Length: 319
Image (cartoon, rainbow, N blue to C red; front, side, top):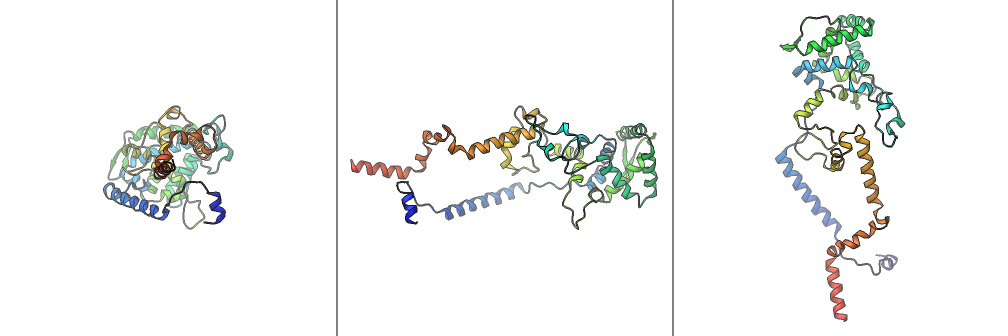
């Protein structure tokens, strides 16, 4: 230690402390705990819900999702930034909506991007799909909705035989042909590629569209079975029993208390509260009254008890 440091620290109680040893001890303890819990609880990861799995295992749910999106009933339709221009639905706090500041960064038109564009790519291999698309797009909006409403209602009575979905007879227009093509894309494992085919890189890193495709029904049902859903999804929710995102527990706690537990602005409210707490802790040493709490509690005397016992003994001998 330099003379300047010795002078600066003169009168400050000090004691030997091996930081390297303490760090290695804590690392060893953590490694043992992680290994034991990993052996007992296994991995918390749940297999990715792929379009191919949904198309083969739950074809009716796959078709219901596709038809619902085509009908314009996707939750993304009016989500707002960063996906759509519907700024009224952006989460806000004190009339401030940060999402609107940045605007639409990932423009998504569910009907076009999730259904019609993938079908247009599939139509290059199947002339029937081309005719169905032309017939659908040339029809009036009312006629399109009539076909889709009838088709979605018929799916409630659909049966699956040898992987083929059978629906009752009805006036569905070209919709069944279009939906069968969507199902074929899924079964072949090509839906994700069709959704994300705008990428210009050799590898795809942005899976936004494929993740959003099944979020309303399929992903929600999987989450329900894994006990991951609630009135307000907390950010700590994760597949498996352990460990979960435990460091995000404060956020998850806020999702369960008013007003966040029933607010459409729960995310931004939780972030605001945690930010205030974080700033409070950072500047705690400079906040009057609160910075005196450690002295009032006296916990430091327990931590430095050996030094205080020596000081007391020295005082007794001097007396």
